[in-house]
Amino acid sequence: MTRAERRSVSGDRRGTETDGQHRDLHFDVSHHTVRDVPGTGPDGMISVRDLGVRYGGFLAVDEVDLDFGSKEITALIGPSGCGKSTVLRCLNRMNDLIPGATVHGRIGYHGVDIYGPSVDVIELRRRIGMVFQKPNPFPKSIYDNVAYGPRVTGMRPASMDEVVENALRAAALWDEVKDKLKQNAAGLSGGQQQRLCIARAIATSPEVILMDEPCSALDPIATAKIEDLMTELATTFTIIIVTHNMQQAARVSQRTAFFTAEADEHGERTGRLVEFATTEHIFGNPTDARTEAYITGRFG
Ligand SMILES: Nc1ncnc2c1ncn2[C@@H]1O[C@H](COP(=O)(O)OP(=O)(O)OP(=O)(O)O)[C@@H](O)[C@H]1O
Image (cartoon, rainbow, N blue to C red):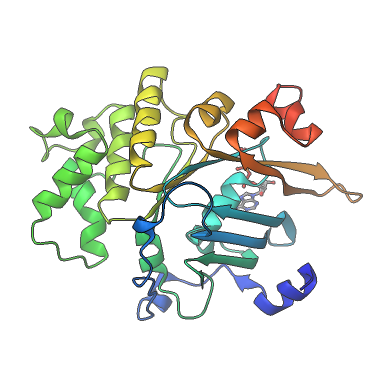
């Protein structure tokens, strides 16, 4: 099937649907046991085919094909404006929240088209959580921040205290906050707040955690802690991270996707995937000259 044919099959998806419209719809991937899949390579848990995104008339990114494997860390890198965050946001349909954003192509999650008509977007985002660039805890207690996701997604754990403790332990924050769980999260340091946001994402038992430049607002010590944490989390979760920091991509990820945006004859800069390979290959022996120029600091 050609790209054009695939596009007409999957069609354009408006980005203006609200979560509420999908609340009654079921997104059932429970028969897939991804935790049994060895994390040795892209196993197609998430497969992106011919993905493109428009913001109004502007084609921000196009023709993206990627496969993400379970329990590994994939880094999305490239110069500013090449569409890394846009692609990341498509993976749990966060672009639905941007008025005027339209998505075409296909994203399969355990073989289910996440833009399909029967997908429950709330459930999708429970399974594919997100951590943002700037730590954004809610103006609530540490405990309530972590309990928030399980509460709003209707999880009924036997013990919420246990869910909160486990998530905070997994985010390497428990020891620092266990005696002040009722205090407001705003009192934590930036690095602690970001680990709290990771705990908040973990609390809903996701399979995948998307991270959009999670360390860019942090100092080097807090960054090192989050990087260590990512490596630890990847034994349980699949992590996809957007980062500007190439050393970080090289340190933490097993696979790297390099994007760039070159102006076409009309001057429109559409982001495209240049190369997707093991991190070792991308940083040691890239195939494309543009990748090499970027990782050696000659452009971007
Ligand atoms: N909400 C939006 N509305 C309109 N255009 C947008 C929006 N978000 C992103 N864009 C545009 O889409 C293109 C890709 O942006 P995106 O943020 O995905 O790139 P990026 O590679 O993540 O950039 P950066 O590294 O600077 O964060 C850019 O030209 C950007 O200006």
